[in-house]
Image 1: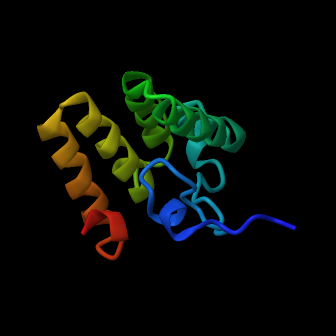
Image 2: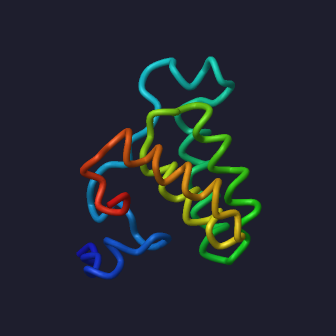
Length: 112
């Protein structure tokens, strides 16, 4: 039996962010033109989330940037990179990523 994500995990910046929903990722060959296959994209996302969880925010920012090159319309990646930038004290860059996440998906709960 699969464990249900708690409310805290569903809305935690670096916790379980999908809560049973599929992760939005690169469709078709879009990622290939940026040198990432779908599997490589998913690995970058996983590595960036793990870096955040262990407090290595500089690495996380770099990895989120790599993933964003493959999927520049992914509001979740902008939101997560914004949180990592905030932890690093890069407030202006964090704000820009938060605004981009909100622009891409105004209903995104972490962007409001």
